[in-house]
Image 1 (cartoon, one colour):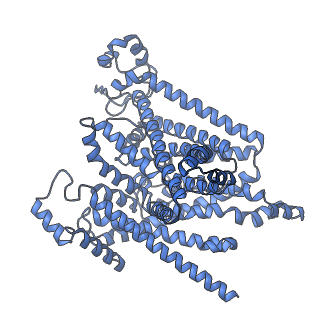
Image 2 (cartoon, rainbow over the protein chains, first blue to last red):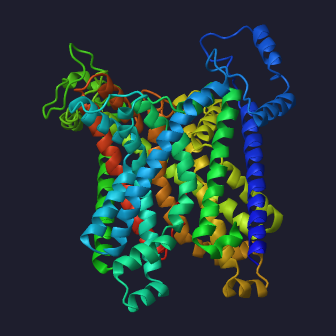
Image 3 (cartoon, chains in turn cyan, red):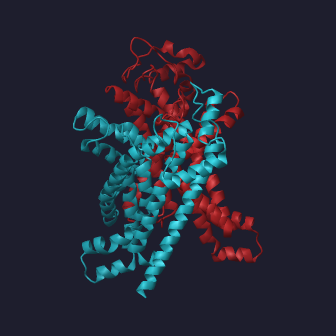
Length: 314
Length: 323
């Protein structure tokens, strides 16, 4: 019986993995279509244009003169783990760029999400159990403020206060532990606000349900009921938000990177798109899509683990 | 939810409406002047004048295009130095007000676009059903899988040439339209998902079945029976798209790919302020005032949106706005 259950789980998991791969393939195709259909390319960036013959030769060398060939070759290369050359940065390949920038962004993004969970969930729970009171109103107003502050505002404010006025943090850059707190804090703020809101809504929903009333009627301590019984189901909305949020925090932190001078991958998304550098666009998109799909898969598995009734959805 | 909290939230929403109305009225009222003054550079011995209650730049420097409303202009001139002057000697006051209008217009248009595409897409997918529904929603999934900043930039780049041709010489308007199309073009995905879910759940309800049994066609059912029930969620999501779009515009402007100089927008001004403060601390007003207006605007919009959600969607679950 148990064995059959496990087999069914594995089959569902496999199906999800395949669906994820199909999604990545579609993302790749769509991005490729956009890249080739949008005018302009890295060889014509305004000021110093390449002679047409040289451009032709360069395109021919990397098989970019034939879209079909380029589509297939890039895909084959990507599957083998080779993203080919970039035209945005001389002397660099896409692999080198991703290898140097992705760890930075993943570290910063995961720390930010961790902070957001550790701050947001307790705040949301307190807000929900003190519903209607002053604490709740304060937290809700704080959430709205957190959602309303652009990261470049919080980033510059933190930078001005801690680095310029108090001189307790470096003014920017990357490499030591002292460089971490300010950008991580800045990046985590909107996620904290959102997780607080989701936790509060989820908690209110669960606290109104029958099994909580039963638990309370049995004479269990309210604290036990909230943190042991109610928290797990209340966190389901948070959990489903975590997939996209983590992917976003890991890759979409370009504003924070710019404010604090962090050498992350966000700037490469922007530069690649601005220069219309096909290799770099395609590789950064593939990295993003892979991270997103993987995280969503992990989240789905955790979902089924927290709430076995949903396992059929995995 | 206890009554006290609801009232407090509603107080926030009312305050938000007042803040927005105040800003809109002030910026519209000063528009005849600010549309000339936002770009008047006064390059004397010093340019970044700090805020002062007395006008620093003499009136004669400003009056070039506002002779016919001279008395009003005299009055308005008094405000020109309240928020200081930027690094090109331009009055920050008369840059922030039109900048606010531009940002707000962006947000509203993005919301309209996202409602237009999102509702059509979601409702069509749900009503047609079957394989078409599957394909349409997979496309939404795939678009979710693309990094949004990349989509905005590519859309902007792709739209630039055709729209500049379309607008003839008015490149600045083309620029704004491109930006809001790009922001609107990526913000409809959540709307499409929500509307599809709503239509699916509405469609199986008895009153729709009854209408169908009476021989009503799908278009009639959508217009007369589904659409009125969709107004609530549509309003809720549209009000939440507005602050998001304002925020995104400010991000794009901050990255230098949003509104182009010298056109002001809140994000553009804040970005200039960040540059000024990062290179030389002391020009605080260039950062503080634009940021204050951004935060005030977004806070007001979010409070109003929250109140709408409370009103239309009291049973809202965690699925809200998970993008």
